[in-house]
Image 1 (tube, rainbow, N blue to C red):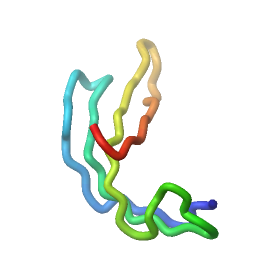
Image 2 (tube, rainbow, N blue to C red):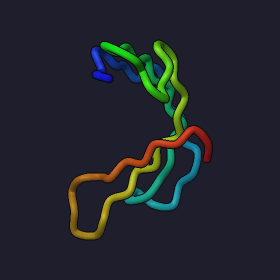
Image 3 (cartoon, one colour):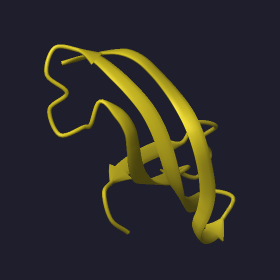
Length: 67
C-alpha cells in the first residue's frame, strides 16, 4: 500500500491533557496505490493522539479507530 494523496477534512478536540499531550478526532480523505489495507479509500475517521516528549520539538502520533 502506498498513500497517493491525503487531505485533512476536519478535526475536533477529543481529550486534552496539555499542549504536549492531546487527542483529536480527525477526518482524512485518503487515496492509495494498491490495497488500502486497514484504511478506507476516501473518508477515514481516526483518533490521533499527539505526544511530545520533554525537551523535544516534534510530536509522536498514535492513530486509533476508537478512543
